[in-house]
Length: 90
Image (cartoon, rainbow, N blue to C red; front, side):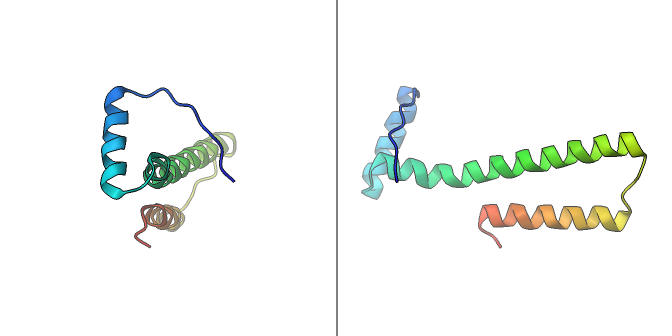
């Protein structure tokens, strides 16, 4: 399923998008979706990480419970894996 989306963007953006789409031989919508999807995934992952970090901070402020160094390493390892998946490196 696809939907039409009307966006207001700069003339320079449209010119660059048009140039890339012509060079690739694909419609502008296909190019825009192709380059935007990874960026959206990254922004969503960043927002999720920020929300989880804020929730952890609030929990710490309320309870005083800490995470061990091993727990922190596990959290960062999970975050790194998520980031690599988004970047296509995993």
